[in-house]
Image (cartoon, rainbow, N blue to C red; front, side, top):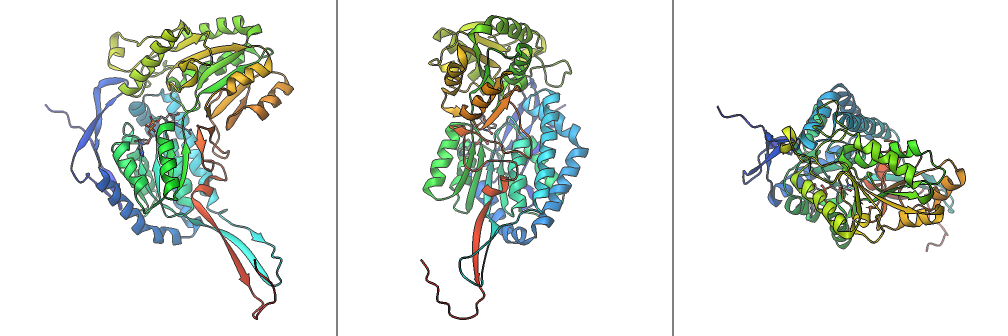
Length: 496
Ligand code: NAD
């Protein structure tokens, strides 16, 4: 008997549709390639343009709804997501591969963002500004940009789309959302969530398919006035260049090479705990994952002994198993990339001290499992210290004293997140002021963030207004200033 495979459709103008040429692609569970997750639309530029047309048609109606009314729908989405959090968590684990505990964290974060953004609907105000002219009133207000494209990666298939879509909706924009090709199922669930919450047709549209054609077509469409992108630095660089050329707004959150400094006075147990969580949690497939640790030579031996012991105790397996600490990588491409970086590091002379292999045997043969891997004696010129691996691979570097540790940590083209372990307030403050990253942690892992705080990187990790927090609506609005002259007659003032 033939098994039925579910078919994921595109959402255009409130209707679920096949793509114009009727082609689909198949997706498999990253923990077990024998399990088909479904077939999804292999859309083309034509579908992307259809979705933009639908978003454009819905714009004036949505933009003219008062912001607190738009916010009611976002509140409703929050309320539904909370009730269905376990279902969403399981769906993330099955499609992306991360352990259930991590998926639950992602759903909680998404709910927090919806709650926070909904509140912003009542705060979408402007300023009143004193004029130097008599009987003149100056005020500002925020207008939506128009149609925006939301282009997202696979590693946080729910929370990243949520933290872009929710502020875009509150601000009055209409959206074409393109989820990553390997996590379209979560994208579909998210669109259904907003529709169940009462979002009118055409306000949120979604198309699946390859980034190089569908994503590109969205960026290039003249009716798309803003692009909110999260993904690799390579794609982000192209989007930013294109947006600059055609005067579109663009916001790009990209890769990282996040370092933890373990200072001479650090609580070593706490540091080990934070480094292991940061490096191997979600299989290292977080943009904020710990990729480098820079440890003071004076405590290196004790740190390494504890780090290796803790790393070797991690259990690798399917994300649905309760005992699992480290799940599979999300795709074959990811697996090949991570294994390439491991062999390249060995060739460059880094010392492999833990892991380093693809895991096989029993059910692991059917998934993309890699051992938590540590390289010691890494130097700043090695590729393993410079490029983003995006897998469970940690590089250990060392130096002496705060200046050298900081200089090594800052020696990166990336600048997303970073952390220091120290009990010394002077070292902590020096780090907070001199670390070249957008998100700084002191005595906690490089990971995470809260819905009400800004999120984003500097250098090659991020460009454009920050996401999340109270400034999230900045990107999705244009600030307009209005001068009202109520003298009622000709005035003498000179204008420049
Ligand atoms: P990616 O750049 O390959 O893809 C991201 C999205 O862009 C996908 O939806 C893809 O289909 C689309 N895309 C690809 N080419 C495109 C093009 N030419 N035009 C328009 N869209 C295009 O990245 P990925 O592999 O999906 O994600 C992993 C990367 O994302 C890592 O580098 C990671 O660090 C980064 N990331 C960054 C953050 C952050 O907030 N800084 C968060 C999560 C992930």
